[in-house]
Image (cartoon, rainbow, N blue to C red; front, side, top):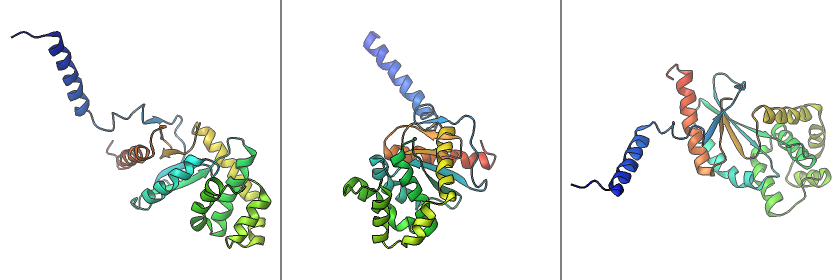
Length: 214
């Protein structure tokens, strides 16, 4: 029987495909769908597996990703915690909306208003980058004006914003939305669904490492 060049090439491709399928699915994503974070960054709670989302209300892609992330986070097991980190990339316009995140977190209005903030900026084209317009908007949404103003301009909130930017530098964040797991892995610039799928795998890896099953 003749073994043609075409048959040889086909056999090689078949062998490569078989070897690829034989590799753990996690190994197939390394270096493409995520990169190791060097040095490893500290997490807030050693008892939990930490997922960070670096984002900005000024980013339309973050607005598109937000409902998917929220639905995904709601189904996570108890040993996983999701923390959101608004960052500015040094943009003055993004500083105010980063302060907005922490202010509403403190006043207790964040969960009910977060989707509205994205919608206001990117759908309704409301200028929430201006402090007065921002204050008027949140007051119309039922936030106490005095409490909001005091918190928004507090040292504590500004410190949180600066800390977020420092974290973004430490994690080498170049774009948002960006996800990181356990201070060790930064998810690549891939589709939203793929981003969450890779995060699930990295959570499983982090869980195995915590339990000593590397």
